[in-house]
Length: 80
Image (cartoon, rainbow, N blue to C red; front, side, top):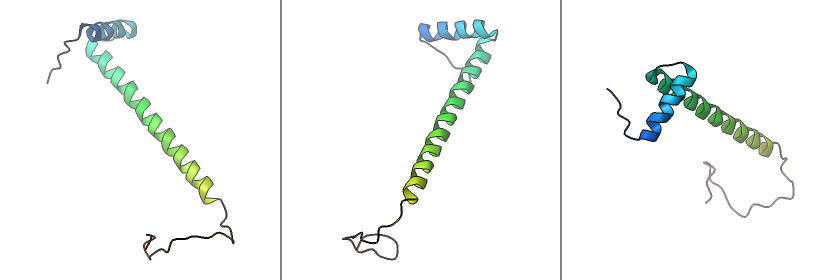
């Protein structure tokens, strides 16, 4: 199904990108989307890595023998 771009600024950007890369407009749009999707995946992977590193750091903190937990917990780990 064809895509119609009504915004002349976007059309001009597609044309400039296509010319700079030596691609057709269709190939230029595909390449730009591929790059954007790769960047999004890379950012999500980095965020996931940072969250797991933070969780590992939190898990490495030893329990204190004098710690007091005012809540009682059920077998599912939920407060009673």
